[in-house]
Length: 447
Image (cartoon, rainbow, N blue to C red; front, side, top):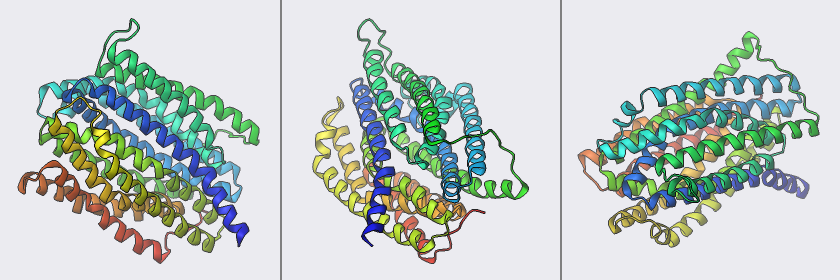
């Protein structure tokens, strides 16, 4: 029993700790970036927030492909099937790159039309457009980095993406300082400078990850012979895994963008306040994202070996870990939130609004984390991604979006209450996810 417990803890730490540290690094440096932009005023904060929100649709869709890759790779590692492992990696790499090119084209061909959906403020829209056009050039290196990181985590080399991320975020922060404010002879580019810094940092991360990737594959004796040819059954299985993830992640991200449009149409100050809270929300979710990633890999490997009771028992342990961690972080956020919003060079009313949003997030955060671990990690690990698709579609479009529209434009509530009301969809998701989890119908081994 002790040996099993120690193995569980060792596996959890080996995967979760590097992923968590990487997420915390990215979120903390994102916070620094946000504070830098925050010195330029509410318009710049809102502009970069809206531009980044549309770009997040790409990140979510790319993440869906990464999830599909992770499910397949983890199970094929459990089965010791190197041929299917290589196919899974290359196929998802190509799909990710194609998606990157498509999104980059959209961001450069019609950014003004996109931003008119988010805000009627011409100044904020112009800043968002300039940011989005430049930032879109980071999409291709981001796709390549993400797929390499998935495989590295599945072969217990999660520390490699962490090192690459650490070096790239330091570069990003340094370039932000130079290009946003025009230090050491560089031009003061403001929002455009932040976008350029992000592109350069993503390119550096891709190069670093690729070098580490080749080294680790050689060290572990893994040979990825190129092949993307799938049998008819293989294509059906791949589409059955990927399509529901793409649908649910795209629909969820579209819903999140509807929420952003709601905030944007409430005014520049409310939108700026919401944008200010983004890095903290990312920091808290990032602190526990490692458990979700570990859940997908650990449970996926157990299902690949058809160790179903072990998979179910480990799942319950992971859920408890996530709940305990999220409750602690929520308490800390309530206690420290005012110190965070005080850093920004914005009007006192905007700071107060941002703090109220943080309180609403602290209340709903434990539920969000449970959904992330259950839906984003455990239930998907068996390849039954259609379950999570329906959970997300019901939560976002039947509850979240209608509640947000009612709260903002019918009940005319202030933005902290709008955010809290629409976030109640997380409770609906959790109730459905718990029912599915306890039925165990998600526990499948890929053949």
